[in-house]
Length: 352
Image (cartoon, rainbow, N blue to C red; front, top):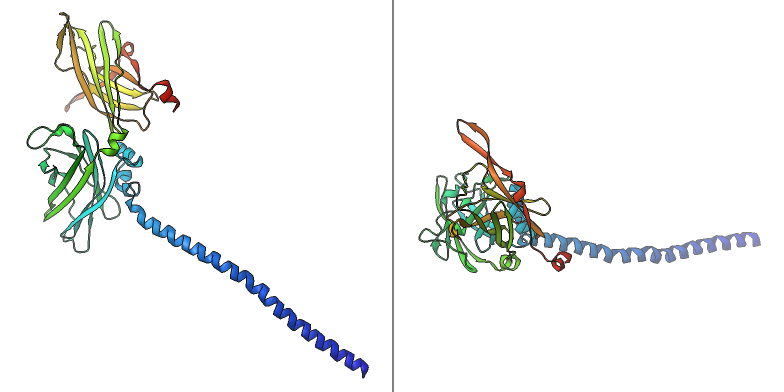
């Protein structure tokens, strides 16, 4: 009997102990789950925030640079990447055809913007915009001419192009001159292919960003060979392009049409980046009787991504490359004795 009672007590104690273990286990099991729940909530909130921020990013010029990056327009791509263009994101919708401007850049002499054409389900035609049907106005004055704007397939059902204006093109009535520091750009399109409409965009434009990034140098560096003096009087570097003012003094009988004469000047930076080339000449003025001085400007050089420490000036002569039924083709050949360097940055600026 005693043995049976002992056995019953042991069984009861065993059940009691097992029951206690279950009660003690549950809090330990639930506690970590409770601690993980806020972490999941935090992660969810972070993901939602990232998604929201991503949706808001189209306000950034880098995100809006889709057309620029796809078409690989080097100069415009460069200013967009540096944040020196203005993100626009404005659009005009007519007849199921949408025209929008994503980025715009303006400096003293140049205006560039990218335009995108897309279609809604209501579009009766998928005609592509012709750049000749784009009209531009600055503060209400119609521009005489613009280039670019040849739209290309963006491979997503849209078309895109870059439209460019230089102040030398001028207005329809009167010369251009420098672009204003602040102005209103009006873009008008009356037709897209055979579709008539009235697409219009009004964009406020400022030179502020480009003016802050523009650098002007007056090196006054001259180089003389065989009585020919080439002087670099002034260099203006906007984020998009570089302008160089030259003075060239030559003997009175010097002929730029001579095969051995200087016909053009190529410019590089110290790293070998070719900025472009301009032609020499113009109307000369007499200097000390038997010598003439020519002043000319090259306005369409590409600005390197980083401000050069110095420029390499490479005078060239014209050499015939080939000839066919369409005409004669020439190339530039460097005249080594005339090559010289023009320092732009001081030692302190180089260290910075």
